[in-house]
Image (tube, rainbow, N blue to C red):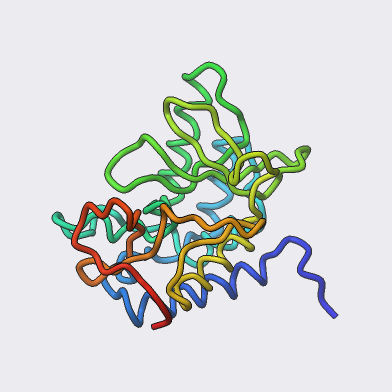
Length: 218
């Protein structure tokens, strides 16, 4: 009997469900997924940053080296934002660049918080994974912003383990509903939607693009 202590097996299974859904219903977004990051690139990234990627995040990059947001249609960059809140997973070299700039140049930025996703087309907001092994938040999700402190997500918690977060994303896409936080709270402001043949996430209460908000299984 194997024990999935670091959640890698769960993460791989969850991402497989997400990618299967993308290929079936959002092929424009699926086409933006980059080839896997190779082992040499992973080792080099860790050496440059001085931080070891948590096993789950490393496993994800071994499946796809982020999303090629530059290949998104000019009038639909939103379809690169396949993660909740419309965030795009960064290629590994972009993650390194986004990590090094704040930790080297900005006072008060936490070392060991790896910014793996951001809003397509800008550098203001995104998701991070905590790579500080000594912390209870290790391997968990958080939010970063240029003008705000880095904070675990959901707030007032240790964050959301990456495999569990991806499992919830898979369920949300398959069921056509809003995200639910670990405590059951519904994320009403971030719902999956189909747009120009791809996937994005919108606030259905203030819909700013002509997207079809998912409302039930597909």
